[in-house]
Structure formats: structure tokens, C-alpha cells
Length: 365
Image (cartoon, rainbow, N blue to C red):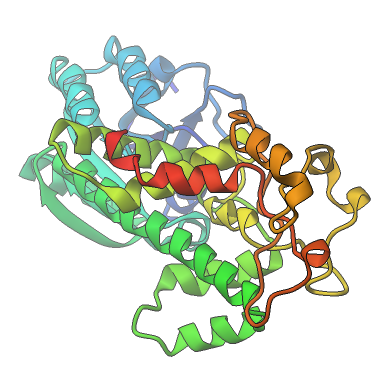
């Protein structure tokens, strides 16, 4: 380990993506050394980023956010030399990526921005798509490493520009899933089979690879993380910050961000971001539209509910609309067709009307 060779590759951050990438590199014949803030039982786990730099000329960084990226390159910097090439794969603000590049280049090492698209399944199959930025020389050196875990490498431009592209693509991804969640809510409210909507979407021009993967899982309430709520929220917050600095009103992005924030507040930050559908759909029950009983609602059953159409609950409704801390999900929407008696009207989410009204002022955020 004290005699580094040009073939050794370091992987910093061995979560869902970093672990899969390290596996592909090993299968391609590269010696791989890894480090993560949380120790992992994986081959060649070393003690620090500096130790990674000590044995590897090429270092891939898969950490989650701006702060983690900058901390990692600072830890690496004392050990970097002109023989090193650092590839940063984090989805961060363009300014953070440029700051990371400056830290690396002060040590006369080379830097490649290599944001990626593709979640858990793509990483496991070695089918990530990398958006890359850097000098021609650095990109040429990085290509064999990136090819080990990708199906395509898209050259974007200078450092920071690939990050902007990645954030923009994630804006569409988040909005796409949020729209699908709301569409499912509408279909359910009208009493139609959700499976028919999924079938219809397959032949629709707006269908996508994202919906093909997410819609069945949304119906099954399968929120195993492929791309987590907390990571998608981080990206939407970056998009919102960029928009604010350029005086842009990004209404869809703000709406998607707000629903991700709500999932975080419910404690679902580690679930897949498609879990935004929780707010809109009933939990599966033997009778599809049967109102859940208190024991089936878990922790959510302790909050009082807003009953539309019942005058005797008007005071409680006003109180609930003013309750800022309510996080209870939407349990049911009113069905289509003729009006039902007041006592059988399904309950709406606590504070729901307040949220609707707040959308009119979302441009002030």
C-alpha cells in the first residue's frame, strides 16, 4: 500500500452508488481502495481520505452534499500531488463544485466534475450516465474509469456546468413523480382502478423511464430507496436557491420541494422520493375505499380530522386550519358523482385548505 500505481482507484463514499461503482471497477480488474465516514465491511477499507490518496492516483468521490464534498477535498488536499486525478460525482451547487476544483488544483492535481444520472438499479447494472466537465487532458484520463460503471458519458463543458445540467434534469424528475402522485389521487377520488391509469400511461406520449419504474412501486407502497427523499430535496433546494439568485419563479420546482419537505417532516427522509404519493393514496385495505379504522392509522390516528359538510365541526375546522405543526397525510378525497350525506363524507387532511390557500402566495417564497 506504500507503493501506489497508476491503476489503483480510490472510492470515497460507499453508499448505494459508490459501493456499486467500486464493484464494477474490481470486475474490470482495477485495484480499489475505499473510505467512508461510516466504516464498512468491504475489501481494502482504509483509515482516511489521506490514506486513499497515498495509495491511489485516481480518486472518485461519492458523497451526498456540498458540505461533505468540500470537507472531503480539504481532507484530501494535503496528500494530493500532480500525479492525482480527482473525480467528483456529488450533485451540488455549481459554485460548490468549482470551489472543490480550486482546492484540488491548488495542489496541481487534476479535477473532473462527473455528475451522474441513474439510481440504484442503473448503478448495479453499470449503466450510469455521467455528465462531465473539465480539461480535455483530465477528461481523457478519466474516461476508462467512468466507462467501468456507465453506459454513456456526456461532455458538458467546464467545471460547474455539468452540475447545473444535473440539477435541471432532477427538477423534471421530481416534478414528474409529483404529477404522477396527484394524478393517482384524482383517479382514486373518482373511484377508478389505479391499475388502469398505469396501463393507460404506458401508451401515453408523456410516459417515461422514470414513470415506468416508479408507478408500480407507488401503487405497491414500495419505497425502498433508489433515490432518497433527502437527496432529492437537497437538489430541489439547490434549484430554488439558483432560481432566487436569478429572479426566476419556478412554481413546479417549489411545489415538488414542498412535498419532499413534508415527507422529511414525517420521518421518511431515507425512503425513495416516490413516497410523496403517501399524502394522496389510501393504504391498501380489503375494501378499497373503506375508511381506515383508528388502529390501522398508527401514529396518525391521534390527530383530530376535518369533516367537510358538518356544521357542528366548523369550529374545529377553523382551529385545524390554523395549526402550523400538523403533518397528518391526506386519507381520502371526495368521490365523483352525487353528493354523499354529511356523516359519510370522507375526512380531508388536517390543514388541507390552509395548504391550498398557501399555494396562492407561493411566489413570495
